[in-house]
Amino acid sequence: MITGRQVRAARALLNWKQEMLAEKALVALTALKRLESDRDLPVHDTTRDLVRRALENAGILFMESDRGRGVMLLNEAPPAAPPRRARSHLQS
Image (cartoon, rainbow, N blue to C red; front, side, top):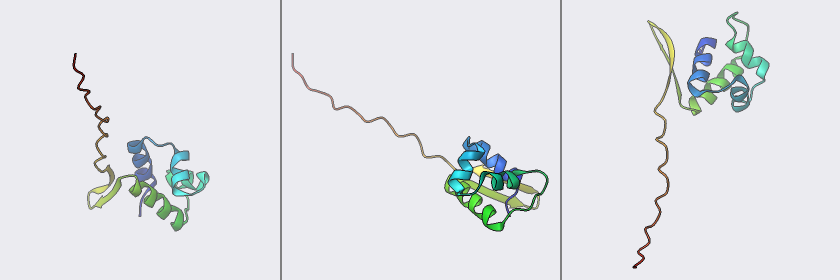
């Protein structure tokens, strides 16, 4: 189960505001704020799952081990190279 700290860290890696994640996950902004809260507020499992899926689709990997939990941003696609212009072979 993902934690609020993991969600906040994942958003930071993606440079997303809460509004962006709520929109991508199709959840209410108030539900996302409850999930990210440090006060352990109750959150529906479906909300947690929709948020997890949206972040994973954006390249976030959730990790958990006996030493702790974390998130990682998987390799981003390299930026597309600008289109090459065809050289004109004008003769002087």
